[in-house]
Amino acid sequence: MIWTLSRKASDDIDSIIRCTDAHFGAQLTEDYLGGLYNSFDLLADNPRMGRAWSSARRCYIYR
Image (cartoon, rainbow, N blue to C red; front, top):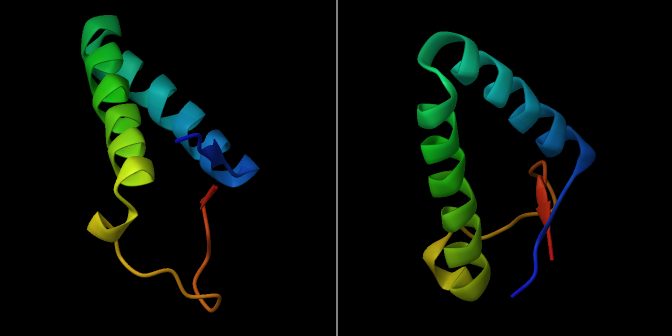
């Protein structure tokens, strides 16, 4: 399944990339992001694994 990040989520991930790279190096940054994106894929393919979405909550990932 395809997923799309909101602008805010994308900006947050960019910040995470910069911080992780500065403190832990490129390899750990790549490993961390790979796991994060794998989690997005897993949740997109199995939406019942995640928490129920509520319009009252902020939404970072849109399908």
